[in-house]
Image 1 (tube, helix red, strand yellow):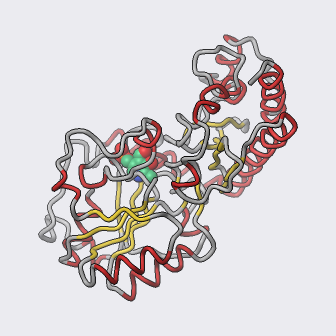
Image 2 (tube, protein in one colour; image 1 turned 180 degrees about the vertical axis):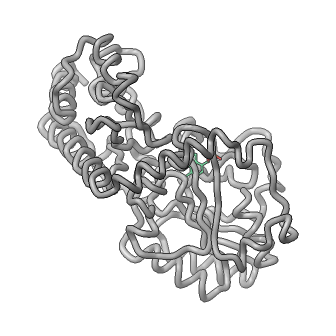
Amino acid sequence: MSAIRLARAFTKRKYIVKFEGCYHGHSDSLLVKAGSGVATLGIPGSAGVPEEFTQFTLALPFNDVQAVEYAFQKFKHQIACVIVEPVVGNMGCVPAADDYLVALRLITEREKSVLIFDEVMTGFRVAFGGAQELYNIRPDLTTMGKIIGGGLPVGAYGGPSEIMNLVAPLGPMYQAGTLSGNPLAMAAGCAMLKHLREHKQEIYSRIDKLSRELVEGVAAAAKDAGVALCYNRVGSMFTWFFTAGPVMDWESASKSDTGAFGRFFPGDAGYWSVSAAVAVRGGFPGSSAYGAGCAADDCGGEAGVCGGKGMRFHGTSDGSGRQFCQTNRLPNHCPLSDWAIWLLKLLSMSGF
Ligand SMILES: Cc1ncc(COP(=O)(O)O)c(C=O)c1O
């Protein structure tokens, strides 16, 4: 919300471009064809948002360069910014097609519009430097959240001083909040980022390997069981879609059988679920069919999987992963991918 206000202040333009299936928070003008929970619930927007509040929001199909070109032609010199999840996590994990982000960069530069990478989910997750490091593309503004709070609520945005100096008190764009700069969240975030910086060589390769094994293992088991399933994965972010695929935008993502996802990850079915197998190592899969799952690292060197709502670190001392294991009577030392395969087979045998 603040990054968009800033882009509007900087360009003195009204329109914004977002993409179908991308979620950028629950401010009124952004709840247009948003992914995440809104997608799962099949709500086109949200009750309580007057149409007038979204009249300057252009929601375009993701991974479609022509649609962006067309919007800039139609709304010449009126588009303040293009905001994008560089790896979408809110319609499930959907990576940008080859050169799509480069095209967004070139078009926004040419049109003097602000390019915003929403790295709330990808920041410090797909790489230490986020998606912009992974793909080597520099946006004008970046938004962050989740991991940078180390489990506590934090949001941040940043960019070059030419733009940032417009924020009050230096400039005329107002922004403030009760929890801005909250000392506890700042301390947790600093500890998290320090840990990541010190261990980045091991952590990112370890969670990449973990997610590859898990995701490919389940996909292979699905193939054996004759279940239509495809997946997308970027580093530790991934989604299994219950559709033959490929999934590259909201239209293809929405072909997913969400009922099958619900049966695969039954929230209340005790340990007869892949959720339990995944959670045995201290985390949870995506919170819904359209929430990306994420492999997570723990400080003790084991690994788990957690939902897209935040990379979860848990210390060895609190033993939360092991606790879960005990209550569900699952053996502690079993590779995640084996559990997933075993359980998927079981589910398929029982008429899944
Ligand atoms: C990519 C992305 N952007 C923005 C947000 C919104 O973050 P917040 O609810 O902290 O405003 C989320 C939340 O899930 C997100 O996944």
